[in-house]
Image 1 (cartoon, rainbow, N blue to C red):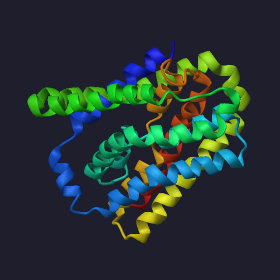
Image 2 (image 1 turned 45 degrees about the vertical axis):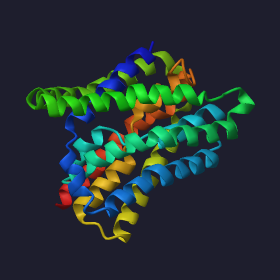
Image 3 (image 1 turned 180 degrees about the horizontal axis):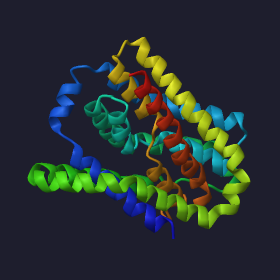
Image 4 (image 1 turned 135 degrees about the vertical axis):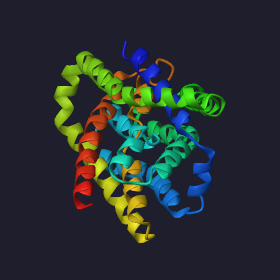
Length: 281
């Protein structure tokens, strides 16, 4: 049941991302490439490595091991743009990073997840149909973004109104998804919430800590640093849930539980971060 809720939600979120994209934003940001390089390194390389380390350290079962690595492989979440704005970050940079990571992870997710599944999944009968993963990501991730970009440039006023409407729906839809998953899997969630809650919180804290450190090393300005921290710390949980629970890929809703708990904790941690930043300002 949950998969037929998460798939439309993911499609709407990616369509909304396309609505907000402007080609001129890419031109402005590429004039200052270091924040992009640092953020993408944090998301595509550092975060999966941290997830692997955390999964090994806490001795997660194969299903939760793969689920934790999966959320770390996903691109930045669409809500990161809102959080960047609240934190006084560089919104154009945030939108650009979300778009680039959404495209690049079409290729990196199959590679990393195939390796992770071979590492711990074969012993318990978990396998990854790479072809189905690529097809689903192209259909649910790339196509909606392209359609959103097309609407933005063809009907700009309608696109702006739609973007405002979908932007307000994003968080409530995520809450609906979390509620449905909790109702279906409340026993498993309650049995593992202590261990998995600590795991995802450690993952988020290490991610934002490393992102902040890397940003300071390359001397990005305060706006860019806040955006990089939020982008690396906020992943697309809906995509992780869709991949884990999809009948065409893993077909394992238990594997989606780390992403469910991650989506809750990332909002809590990053809201605290935004509060601290706003107080300092």
